[in-house]
Image 1: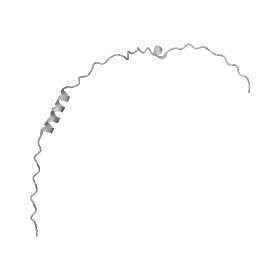
Image 2 (image 1 turned 120 degrees about the vertical axis):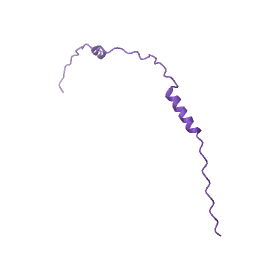
Image 3 (image 1 turned 45 degrees about the vertical axis):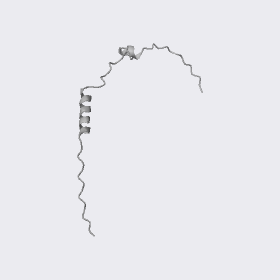
Image 4 (image 1 turned 30 degrees about the vertical axis):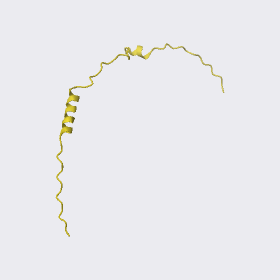
Length: 69
C-alpha cells in the first residue's frame, strides 16, 4: 500500500443562521391563557342539558295475548 501524505486545510466555519440572517427566537415566551369556557362551550353544555332533560315516555305495555287452553 503506498504512503499518502495528507494536509489539513483550515476552513472558515460560518454558522448557517448567520448566512441566512435568521433571527433568534425566544422559546420561553409565555402564551396568553385561552379562556377555559367560551360561548361555544356554553351553548354546547346547554344543548346537552336540554337533550338529557327530555323525558322519554314509557313504552306502552303490549296487550296480553289471549291464553288458548
